Length: 71
Image (tube, rainbow, N blue to C red):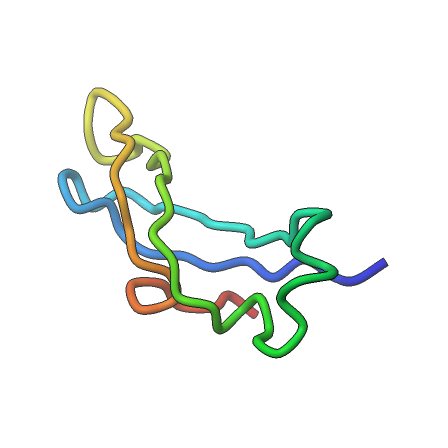
């Protein structure tokens, strides 16, 4: 089984960490072979951890432009 990559950015509202774990869907295995999953541009909705504020925020982010890979 392949290792899952982890990406991180900051919440646009409260600057708390936001994590994203891209994973291929079953239908993507047959159709998207030419572009690696880590490089495909898409808009993702992620929820921050809420560490810097009283609540969590779910916002849209552009992957991979707004994220950095965590080693």
